[in-house]
Length: 332
Image 1: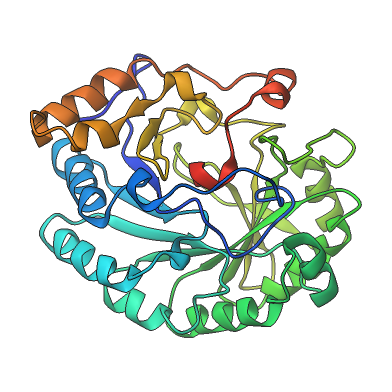
Image 2 (image 1 turned 90 degrees about the horizontal axis):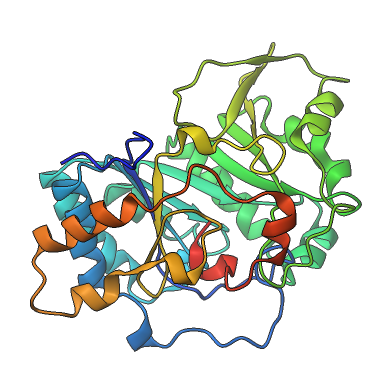
């Protein structure tokens, strides 16, 4: 069956948070706070994840699965999970993607590609070692850069680099990032700073992608590329160069009208929107652990729940006040 909401939007893209744990403490995502991480029993097991993915691909016709976190590669036995996932992917083809901070990627990426990984996004918010430490709390810049190099050499096309830009923190590196990707098979994607619980969002730090575009065009000529309706990023080629620049404007120019994605949190809740609250989530983990629910029954529950999805996310004033939307367990 096709997965459609009440506005007629077909949903065929699922993002799954494998864990709420991360080895970095990025200020906009995982500031050092007192909230505890989920324990093993509270998160979806690998068997439960595999069953869910099969339900979405087989019963609900999803075409794209992205694995996120926290940091997905901190989860134990992650390669064993990819082996099992590869078997499903061979029988029921779909596009498999991964978003990672890149710190644990270098020694795993060859196996990940062998086990069916199609696309990779690597988060990187500074090219300066001292500033990388300031933003993340860890001295891991060089391991991330090596991972980017290796992903490019293995033929991931392109390697996407996710960069959250914050005024007064890293906005002076925008041109540096363009120069980093311009002659490589890389795509830097500038993402607007979004408000989440405990990340101290404020309008003084926020900088719109429209402003970043103007900054880049003082030095480089960009040409917008055609993209499918469901894409969240506006993609540009750098005229005269190989690399690409993209903008994800979740705040200043949201793309809710063409949203085609659902999210599953680390503790097994189905989120209809990145900014939706706990009271609007469907507990898939409870359905999976109830022997009365078949795959078909769970798929039906998901399809019904999708009709509760709103047309767009709240405005910025309401977003700032939202609670219980910690980015770590949502998976972005």
